[in-house]
Each structure stands twice: as C-alpha cells, then as structure tokens.
Length: 207
Ligand code: GAR
Image (cartoon, rainbow, N blue to C red; front, side, top):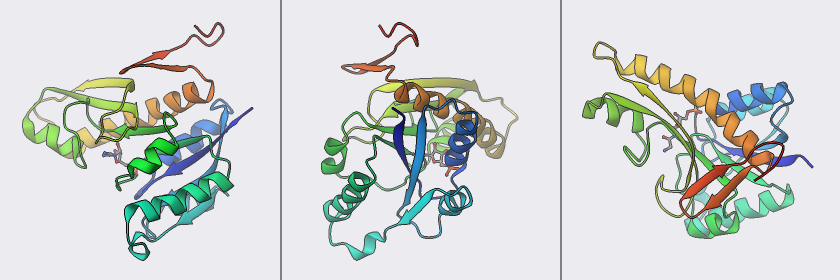
C-alpha cells in the first residue's frame, strides 16, 4: 500500500516542490496528503494549495508549550493516517514526544555534510569556515539536533571563486535530487536502521 506522507515546511518549499514533481512520475510510491507549517506566510502552503494538497498552518504562539503544540499536530497526523513525516526546511525543533511517537518515520534534509555544520545556517557556516568540500545529508530525525542516522549524502567541491549564492544554488540542486530518492526508499520499505547505520536494501530482494 502507498505510504501517506506529511511534509513539514516553514518557508519557500522548494524541496516540497521537488517531491511533488518527482511524484508526478508515479515513482515515489507514496502520496503527499498533507503539508504542515508553523508559519502562515510559508510559500510551501501556497505550493500545497496549488497542487490540491491539504495545507495546514497552526500558530505556535497559541500554545503554552512545545509539547502541547506538537500533541495537536500528532492528533492531525493520526486523523490523516500519516505513515511518514518529511521535514523540508521545518525550522522549528520537534519535541521528544513527537519524535518518539513517529520514531524512525521522520526524515530530515540538511544542507551540509553532517555531522559538520549543524543548525539553521549549514550552507553559510560551511562557506564561511572555508571548507573545500561540503554537501547535503538526508537522515532520520532523532531527539538531537541534525543528529539521526544518515540515509544519503552527496558531496560537492567549493571552488575558490564562487559566491555564497553560487554555493546555495548547487546545494539546492543536490537536495532536489536526493530527497525524493530517500523518500522513495522509505516508501518501498528499503531502509533498514542498524544502530547509527542505515542500509539501503535492494529493490527486488530486500536484504
Ligand atoms: C533547505 O536547504 C534545507 O536543507 C534547509 O532549509 C532549506 C529549505 O529550503 N534545512 C535546514 O537547514 C535544517 N536544519 P526549501 O524551503 O526551499 O525546501
């Protein structure tokens, strides 16, 4: 059966768009049935509406604690029978209660080669540090910051004459290529977590 996917996004939503576009090929093996945001102005919500996907904004300032906010989100996800949560630029830390409720069913994308340059400014932090190689990581979310088991990574060289904007463009291009792949692997039950390591199983003989 096709997995029911919720995408969480706080901003522009280009990764959401990449998933929607990839799914048009029919190859994702999942349905994006919900887009959720903590930011009412997130362009991701507009993208959802334009693509006839249910778009929900919940205002965090209306809740006293993160736990209360997240338990409302959990209610929504349960109602929508969500199998997989895909974080796509969701810039709001999830509570431990949320993470444990969806254990091993939350994916995140981060614009650096983890564990380097965690946090909200992965691209700029790597650029400013002067590393020669950076990249993109897709991983399972756990209780820590950008710390869960890694599913896919792709590296790229930072050339000495390139600007931060050039680098951002290259990073996003990689993100839009590898995130749909990781989601597809999840939807095909091909991700096996063994401690910190994630094995990608062969499509036909899953071992
Ligand atoms: C992406 O670059 C993603 O890797 C990053 O936010 C951007 C969202 O872009 N996420 C993080 O930095 C998480 N720590 P988008 O809204 O266009 O998909």
